[in-house]
Length: 466
Image (cartoon, rainbow, N blue to C red; front, side, top):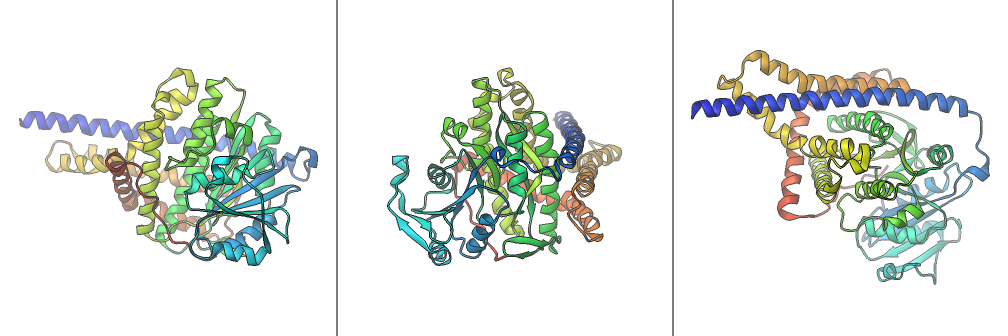
């Protein structure tokens, strides 16, 4: 019996070790691809700098903003969206049954007038309580509807849009004034593009005025700084690298543009999905491969959307629990992609990576660290193996986070304070030693919750005024 336990633990320890080796090698590959991609993108931007795109080539778009209890900043957000540097766009706010006076604030601030107009999609009309046009700015449309969730709210908003492209953003998000001009260039430079996303950065700690970042600062709280590091890594080498390999499976719901004809072919945002953003992109990828369309889903590292991140570990746990449930749902509902050569790199690389490392990684980390420490205490593994395992799984992870920070700052130079990068490197240390293990617990909890309880509640995180 003792030999069986010994052999089982040694095999398990070896599997965990090689799991982290493969994961971190893949991260390094993504980082290298991202570095080359960012260099190419910067060269392209240098060529385009000072060369304006003729207006006839600039694609008009509709901004869709689902709003639920956003009274704290909704007026500032709308003003900032209307002030974007772009020749032709509209803003469609859909009030999803707010109970905090969001609608009345919009009515007062923008002189809204109720009009007799219906959605072109009859089934959407059932929940709509009113449609308003602004007497101050003809580009603003406000829809009031009964509460039915973010995906349904986006679908209703899209049905009222006038333009061939729609941009979905969160109501608490802030766009840099030239972000849409940069992101929409993806559709001009590569006409086969059917969807594109930009960088999501955290506004926590920064100075904001009239819906714009006037001074970028890193937040004071460790929990917020750790998220800055996470977002750097996720968007810088995660999204960029995967886009270059044509296996991009998610465009953040906080900042993404979609071609409406393709959006209609996949029936819009799925109302039963926890993560409607990921499910939409996967559906688009499946459509592209199934119908052999000469299309691409892109990502641009320069257009920035600023968002508020949770400022407490409790709120962050709620968010990551929901994100994991969304990931598990998307993986389980799209298993037809798993190692399916019909879907090319998406089926053979992209989907397996998300399944084995993004979804199952939480369970591996949650079990792996304690198991190897127990094996060491019982004498089944020696100290050199323990040290090597921790170096591969934690120290290597910190090095990758640090390299991401350095690459981001060298490429974009967002922070003016010389101590900012140093403080973020310190945050990267705490991310790998302490936070990462807690994060694995939140994700495992979300996974278990989905398996035994299904979709579950959305989980509300309190907003803060800018």
